[in-house]
Image (cartoon, rainbow, N blue to C red; front, side, top):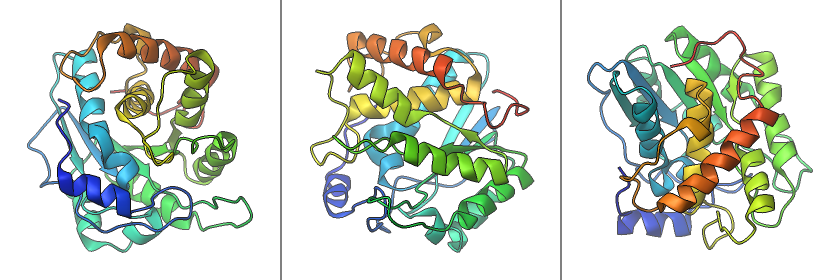
Length: 261
């Protein structure tokens, strides 16, 4: 369920630059102990791009809607960190190893905002290996492009390079954002900083993660009235965009043997 963002989160978002090679924050993100036994447990590891606008909760709500006879639980790893920082973060490692997750969603691979530098992907590759040790399907979460910057393919290809070394699904989130901006240029997806998502942008990213997990076309997902920050007409527009995107950019292109939820 979409919930109002607490004031401390808004302050943290204003202070923490989390895209590209900008600095990360160790402000505590919503998290908790491993969930009670669930049919589909989800673990999210990322920074404020994952935390903002209840993206994690929206993914879980979508999976519940598509799998009404199964239970779904989700946890967000503590702190906002790049993957290169999180790999040595003991609480994150303990959480990852605490149970067999259905899916482990990995966001916050550092990349060069200018495109002139290269950053290590070894840490992301190690996370993929650790996720598979827990019998989870690892999903790489490439960030959407910043407002007005043509960087979707560069970010996506970076994550594909990780999946080519350690097999993981790669959600085509940036491609969905680009298509939405083409189809509905008046529909804003970014927050005021031009980097983070607003609720509609988070909803679109959640749709792409949902499709990657379930193999269900976003067009088959029913309206989600409990996601109150995104009205139902906007949800419909974004479902159509997401459905078109997965036809052009299959989320399982790099993990064809992995099961769906």
